[in-house]
Length: 344
Image 1 (cartoon, rainbow, N blue to C red):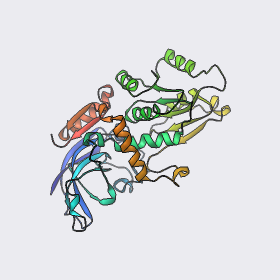
Image 2: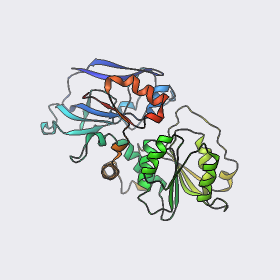
Image 3: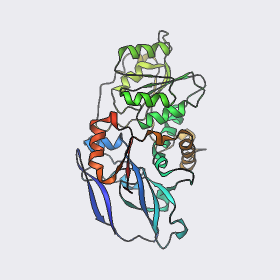
Image 4: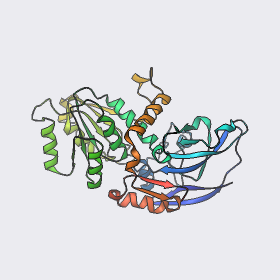
């Protein structure tokens, strides 16, 4: 069978390749994709050649767990499709069911049952492509552990930042404040439930936010800061805004990007905690009660409640992949979330 696959061939270059795939093994099934979402954070690192070559793309996913990063390569982890064929060892009654897979962008993907997540019947496929990002937002909030009456700051209002803000807005917090430089995303941030939205590039905005956080008091400031901008220099801003004994939750993957971080002033004397939050695992303190199945169930509930499909900027034919990545790279203000449509 001939399938179409997206390949990153060099920095700033992608192409659609037609590939012959082998017949299904007895434990495999073939998923015909309907949609897949581009993860503008991680995938732009791949597109720009900013990934460290010394590590795998994702140790938790079989497709990306082995080998160093080198071109050409496939990537992507937010596909929604329907089961078209099954191997002899798979129950044929699942043919036609819609599923989410953490697989590369392609017209079809071969999977095993443990590599798929069945999409609930009441969730539209275009909403279902947000499962991975919603699970990430759930994980971030769990790692941040916001408490009654606290102030939270979210740096970056890309998709993960917006979803994190939406989840935080459901908590009985004193305030949820967002920082975002792109004007079009600032308006989305307001819709996401942030109490106020500020530009990190405006000295007046930063001053106003510090007033909200009562930073004239030496022990005031944000109780928890989520750094989701993808820019390591934003860690300096996170430290600057974080209060005494506060938490900074880092959800960004910076790849090869580096920045000087000032750990010699407020950070040193304020007992600030920096937490690495990564969705491929569950925090050890939660594993006694939480597993991936429970977290997926919660993510589906939050998709129903938050309706993240409202953030889709463009739904483009798969054949337009080159245009899609160029747009995300050069004009992020025009493309909050790009989705490939395999039916176009």
